[in-house]
Image (cartoon, rainbow, N blue to C red; front, top):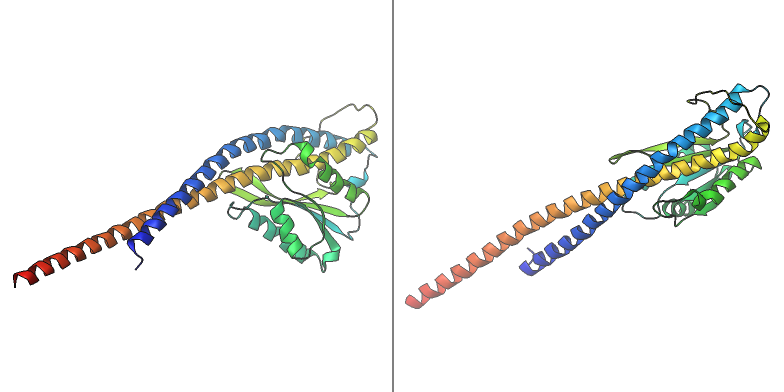
Length: 286
């Protein structure tokens, strides 16, 4: 059995750890509130731009664009959104497992696809497995702006336009609630299902519809990446808050168990000392 000093030391160190995890839980809760508001505030913009694009694409005859055309797939691109740091439960492992399994199922070799990694965890994961990482971005803030990912989103869209990739998939964690987030796969390009849920509205366009699509479609695709990033950030903060709460609860339980062991050991030591004193006194009386 460990000594009283060792048990007391473990109790003190566990208390310090629980204070840290509790503080991290509170920080993540604060960040989650703002990240959730950012994700929700972006939804009306996405719905409106989708409505306009769908109205042009489906409401006008003879209007077409390369970003809406399916072609023979020679190489596939994957945009995978993870975090830069761990301590977020299964947030990163779930998304990486889903993305990597999809790559293995769809392709026979690593030459048939490339990865655009957003987040250090995903970047390191794919590099260790010899996956071709064509572009990367790390060090994004907890509340990223569109300007932060404009370059990499634009690069991804351009790589489809110049036929480096023939299709693009987006993998991220969709925020449902503070305790639930879902691994999501979305086909980013080509935009074949752009009007699935869009409401068609009649518009008058100036200049021509083709010119508007030329500008609007790349912006729409880039916005899908940004919207997924906002969604992922909210999920990340929620996952980290939940993980730190679980760690704090486990630490408290461990402290209680160690305290019980400490009290029992201390009581046994006191009983032993009393027994020795009584035994010594009895020996002197004989």
